[in-house]
Image (cartoon, rainbow over all chains, first blue to last red; front, side, top):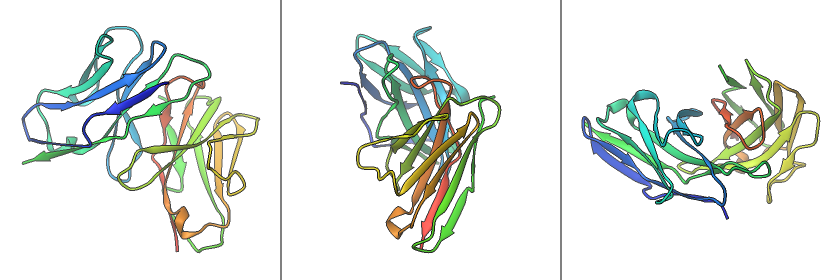
Length: 114
Length: 115
């Protein structure tokens, strides 16, 4: 069965320090992996995606994620947090199957301390 | 590119009335559209998947007679909440895709409040 687990429901960091949001997946097939960000009362904005090309994926706003097949992980990182990064982040998996559906993680709320 | 709009962005209605939410793909043809519901501080819950010109496929537990979905064209899908009740109050988000198992492009969401 396919699944995605975001290991932290809430992460709090100080402005200017690194951000790490963890995501592990389970998929029978080679998946496509995504990170989305959602600000309050807004829709989802795509940060970055992995679709079987380079394992280190760079996204918008300085975020990047590394696909590690051996660890079944796709953790999101940013070297230096900004106050505007405070939001909800969702890790999403689309298993490589025409009959499969998008699978959402439970979300991680990122708070930034001044 | 790949912009999805929703209208309205927020709506307040009285209990017992019906509300229609539109989802449009502005610069691409969406063969598949998805409707999600999101409760406060929770992840998105898929309600239904619709393909242009055919009936929507509803997820288990979603009442198809209450949440009517129409996907009449490759750029427009509508969700109608019939006989709305306060428990239907939620954030509704649509997304669109060119294929079922590929990247989805999300709309900005519609906040529904039923009084």
